[in-house]
Length: 418
Length: 158
Image (cartoon, rainbow over all chains, first blue to last red; front, side, top):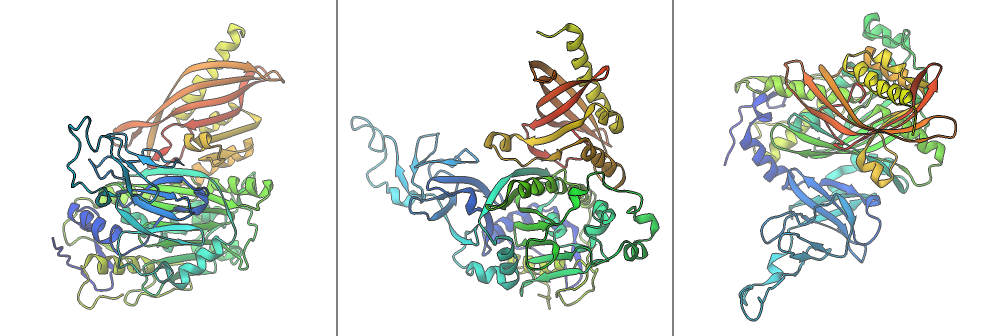
C-alpha cells in the first residue's frame, strides 16, 4: 500500500483536507504511527500503585492492558486473547493475580504469559489440543514500556528510541515541572468527539485559536494574545509547549489589540472570582503551560488545574478524549477544593475548552467531501522554517506535527521542511 | 409519607426544571435553586470510585449565575435543542431542617440544527428540596451521568 500525497508546499502550510477523511490513510496511521516507532501515553503510575493493579486503555484503536507485576514492574500488552481474539480484560481498572478470558477461560499472568488452557489434554483422553501445541508461543502481544516521572508510556516498535530521547529536553522539562511531586489522582472525564483525531492534535498546537475561539479566556484575562508567552518545540518539532504569563498585559493592552467590540472585560465580572485565582506553584510564573506529545497525549496546567489528556482514535470520524485530573499528594483540603473548582474551566463542559469539540466537529463536517486540491491554510507566524516563537499569534507547531507525521507515513514532499 | 400537596409541588418542580432547560430559559432555571444551593454534574465512574472530579461544579448560586452569564456572553457551543424526561421520582427522606432527599431518573435527548437527534444523556438526580417562601426549590442537585463519555460537548446544564 502506498499513498500519493500532492503537497502544495514543502513546509506544510497547506494540508489537503482528504487526509482527514480517507480510510487508507487511517489504516496506515494505525500501522506506522500508533503501532510504529512512537511512544504513546498509557496512564499514570499513581493509578496503579499496588501489585496486580491494572487498567485497560487504547493505543490508537488497539486495545491495551496495563498492569503492575508482583515485583513492581509495569507491563503493557494487547488486550486480545491469543485464542479467538476476545478482549481478555473487560474492566476499566481493578486488581487481579491473573487475567482470564471469559470465552474459553484461557488465562495469562501479569507479564502476559499464557499459563492456563482448560481441557488442554481433553477429558479421558478425548479432545483437547495436539501434543505439539506450545503455550509459550501464544502469550499476549507485549508493548515495550517506559516510565518517566510517573507517566507510563508504551510502544509497539523495537526501533523506538529511549523515552527521554523521544521526548527531548523541552518535553522532559515540562513533564518534570508538572510531575514534580507524588500525585493524587482526582478523577476522570471523557468525551466522544465526532471528528478526525488529527484535528485535535492540531488544535493543541494552535495558539492562534486559543484567545479567539475561547472568549472566556480573553474576557477574564486568563489567556490573551497580548500576554507574554509563546510556543516551544522539541528538535524534531513533533511535540510542543504553549505557555503564557498571567498579568503580563493590561486590559488596556488587550482592548487596543482586540478592539472594544471583542472585549467584554469591563462589562462582565464573575460573582465568584475564585475560579480565576492563580496560586503560583512552580519557580516560574507561567499560569498556562500545556504541552502536547506526539501522537496521543497532552499535559496541562492552567492556573491550578492539572490534567493529562489522552486521544483514542475511533475510526476516521471520531475519537475519544480522556481527561485524568490530579493534584499533589501533599495538597491540603483547601488546595484540593481550589483545583476541583478550577476544573470548571476544562473538560467536555469546561468554560475554556467546550468550544474545541464544536470547532473540530464543524471543521470535520464541512471539509469531508472536498476534492484533492482543497487544503487548510496554516501560515500564522510565517511560512518556511519550523521553529519556536516567543509570541502567541501563531500556529507554527501544527506544521511541526505534519512534518513528523509525513516522515512516519513516508509521504514527505520533495525538499520537505522538518 | 408526605402530604399529597407536597408531592405535587415536588413533581411540578421537576417539570419546571426540565421545561426551563428545554426552552432555553436558563435565567428562570436559576430561580429554581435556593440561595445556598450546590449543583454538580458527576461522571458515574467517579461517583463509584469515590473520586471528586465533576463535569460541572457550582458550590453556590453565584457560581451558577456565572455559568449562565458565561454561556450567554463568553462561550460558543453546538446549536441544539434538549428534551428532558424526568421519571421515577422518589421522595426518600426528610432532612433535619425540614427539607427532603429526593431522587429521580432522567433521560435527555438532543436535536441539532438540521433536525437530527439522539439520546444525549441519562442518569440519576440526587437532590435535596427545601421550602423557600411559598415555593419548593432545589438546595442540592447532583446529576450522576451514567453515559459519562459525553457526546460532542457539554454546554447547557443537564
